[in-house]
Image (cartoon, rainbow, N blue to C red; front, top):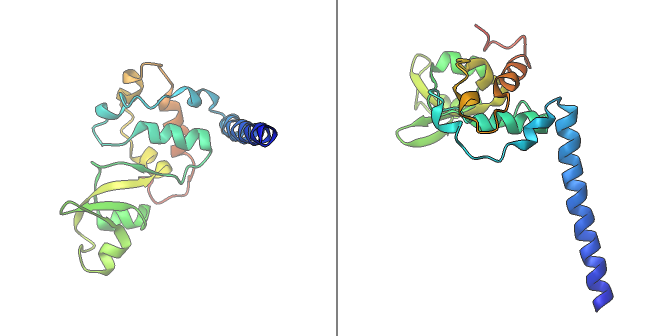
Amino acid sequence: MKKSFIIFNVIIYLAIGGYLGFIVYNSLAAHHPWSMACYNCKKCDSVCVLGIDPQGFITAAYSGEPDLYIRANNIKLTVERAMNIDPDMRISLDGNEHVLHEALENGLVSISTEIITSSLRASDAARLCLGCGACERACPLKLPISRIIKDLSEYRKASPCKD
């Protein structure tokens, strides 16, 4: 019994070590190893006028996943422009969250309606970011969040999101 418990513990520790190694590898491969230092205190969150979660940018950076959906709940766009950016973005309508293309197909919005985003891809949110640097100034660790945003905004150079 004791031997099987020891084997179980070793397997668990190896799995945890492998997972942490994978995270470290991804952050190094994405060229943002310092992004792992973010402890999700959310101080940067409250200062963004567009309601973008800067911690979502950091997560996208260390995971190497610019298509990760992050919270962005104060960006106002027309449905037409939003459809050009990402038809799968989430929008807020009457207190409910909807997928943009489904809301358009179901007649909840028209092509000229102005909508408020709820979540969108990190790379798209980076291109819509104002670049004011408030999130970086609010970060207690002084992480270079603006650098991540710049890198993510260049992810899809041919995107229609670029103005």
